[in-house]
Image (cartoon, rainbow, N blue to C red; front, side, top):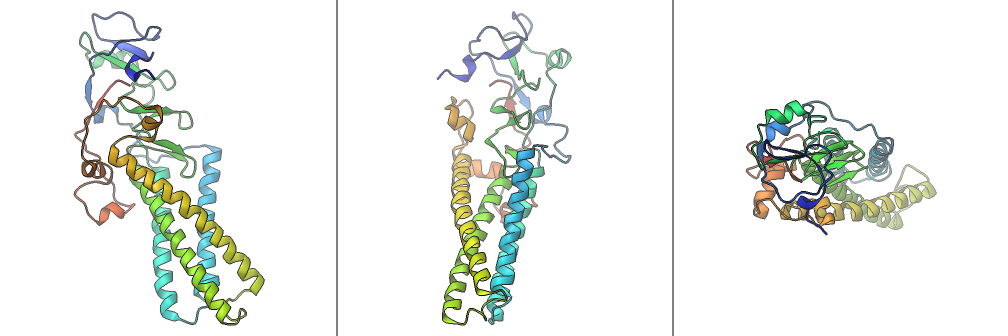
Length: 311
């Protein structure tokens, strides 16, 4: 597969170079232009971000409904009818705390700008203001007409170029990129934890009901209780496997500092290699603290970081 610097792209050359715009000829490797992250940060980064995609919205709503279903079964089928008050309080508090953190992480992942490049900034006036030197070149995305920094990819659903885009996830109705990867990782982790917790409680409840009278172990009829527990068991097992795999994939991607798209396309590595610990701190913030596990804490992602305007 050809190296990305040899692909055809819409380009703007500095003074003394020939050709602009159409990108009809493939280019050889050019000098890269380090530009502050502030220059390419979307003006909407601090505003509410929401993708109006029907499939994504439906998937997001389904996600919340499944969590609420699990809440209903855990509370009203298993915990409230239990005769052991300590068991109900401890498990109810733990499950509801994890569920709250999961939904909060989902909301942050969905409503956080993933790292969108300003749309339509590849104008002649703006490119001239960069004061390019001979030999320097900037690449622009022909789909959203934006200057495309290194490691950015265009998302056809978001209709924007996203910095360090990993993938577009319909379950959070958003791209997973530089600014919201932490929240997506936390979402998969907390969903996996509540799925595991629910499965353990279902097993204990079945054992309790087999030893005791089925009419006394739940406020619902025995057939209804069995159906509700089986559905919860199926849901918990399915999402435990799915989110555990996603969590492991995301952590591996962070540690290797290579996004899912970069791995899929086998793109040539052109950025500085850092340690796994440095890569984790770049996503979750530094130094390490309990805030890493909080969806309400916003990491700085390294404000002094610079980007290269090439792909």
